[in-house]
Length: 197
Image (cartoon, rainbow, N blue to C red; front, side, top):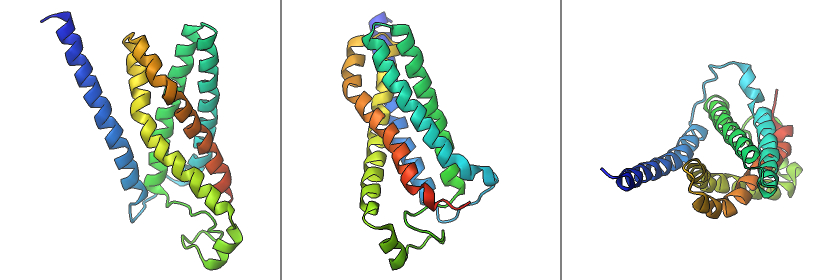
C-alpha cells in the first residue's frame, strides 16, 4: 500500500471521526440539559461549576488572542503551546459543563426565587435585559455547536502539517471561537445573580 493511499485513508477516518464527535457533543449536551429529573450525586461543589467555566472561558479568550499575536510575530512554537492550552481548557470546560447539567437544574433568567417558574412579576422585574441575555445566549450556543468541527479540523491540519488548509480554516474559526469564549463569560455575568446558593 502506497503512502498516498495510507494518508488518504487516514484523512477519511479522521474526517469521519470529527463529524461523529461534532454531532455527538451537541446531542449529548441537549439531552442532559432537558433531562426531566436531575440527580445531584456529586455534592454541592457542582453548583460552583458555572463560575469555574466562566474563568475557563476568560482564560481561553486570553490564550486565543495571545496565540494570534504569537503567530503574527513568527513564534510558531509559542502559538502551538497556547492553542494546545486553549484546546485542553475547552475539553475541561465540556466535561464540567456536562457534569453541571447532568446534576443541577438549569437556571432561568429572572427567576429570583429559584423555583424554576418565571412569574409575570419576575419577568417584569428582569426587564428588557432579558432580550439581550437571550440573544447572547442563543448566539453563544449556536456558534459553540458550529465551531466544534472547525476547531477539530484546525488542530488536525496543524498536527499533520497541512498548514495551508489550517490557515484557511482558522480564518473564520478563530473569531467564532473567540466570540463563544467571550459570550460564555458575558452570559455567566448576566445570569449569575439568579444562581441560588
